[in-house]
Amino acid sequence: MLKIQTLNKIDHEGLQVFPLSKYEIANEISNPDAILLRSFSMHEMELPASLKAIARAGAGVNNIPIDRCTDKGVVVFNTPGANANGVKELVIAGMLLSSRDIVGGIAWAQTLAAEGDKVPALVEKGKAAFSGTELKGKTLAIIGLGDIGVLVANVAKSLGMRVIGFDPFITVDHAWKLDQSIVRSESIESCLSQADFITLHVPLMDATRSLINSEKIAVMKDGVKILNFARGELVSNQDIIAGIERKKIGCYVTDFPDASLLNVPGVIPIPHLGASTNESEVNCAIMGANQLIDFLENGNIRNSVNFPKAVMDRTCCARMIIANRNIPTMVSQITAILARDGINIANMLNRNKNEVAYNIIDTDQKEIPDQVKQKIEAIDGVLMVRILLPN
Image 1 (tube, rainbow, N blue to C red):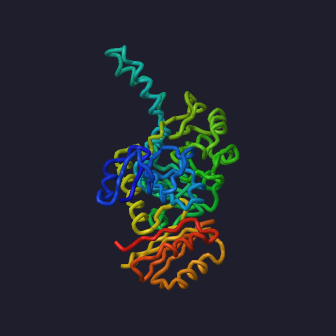
Image 2: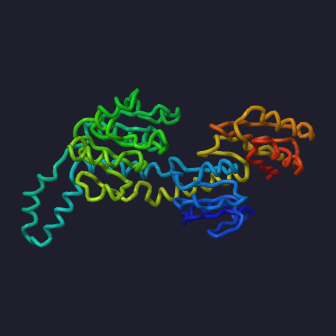
Image 3: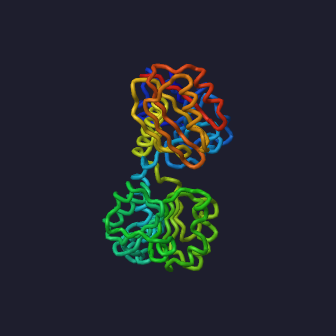
């Protein structure tokens, strides 16, 4: 029986993916094989020795101690794309909110409650103060053409916007999904300088922290609208506020407000609603559960943030999965041990990502002796060894 610990409330449809005949699922559980969570912070948590994998039902993994997990051979999954449609729709709403003073207009209309029959006339008289512009014909710059960025690009194009994008690491799959008329910029500065609207869809890392700062703002058009539904730390809030004060920035819409952005004219603070839809929560839970099942039962890895993608069809015999430091001679040491113990390799997959490597080895035997596992675990640089018996 495999044990799954849930550190947050996980959608019921996601939990139903786990076959009850094979899995025990609980919030409080000893020696879990895997953890399924949403926003719970694991940074102060001791990782159980039994832990093999963690799945985040969402895209961001800043609540998970990635380096500690990697050192222990724990595979960390996320669910990119599962909440993409929900975020996409809120980005479009954010563009509409920033192009017209809808928020201000609604707040003003509420102040007329005591005016009785005068309200219609007052509305007609005062509405000019909240006028704005249409999206059609405007230029949208998208920084990051992943799952969400591609969806936003295609919808914006259908609304009659000119769409330009910047992503030096765009995948072939994402490129195929882009509308052919969308222009890719060669530099972020070129992309930003042409835009009436800018939306951010890149992960937070050292290279992207404060990506939007005073230098980047300086190349933008006057009155530009900036939307951030990715991560708050991608922008310098201080520089954003300064840009608003000198009317360089027309509006900043963020799904990640902090105290410095509240009650600031020109800032629309949204309380992290990007993926807060019933559909997104269901999709993320189901995707995370399926990834854990495929890893625990077959050793396959899809959508890991710390290990490479590695997928190989099962054979009828025992399978070994081995994680190790990405250093020379590791594969030869592993295969030498198998050869000395008379274990033939029927099929093998080796993949690497940054400083780690991952091996899936199918043998022609129904089982593998424990001493073989122990010998491989003793190799300097090996992080994890598991033996998966035939189903």
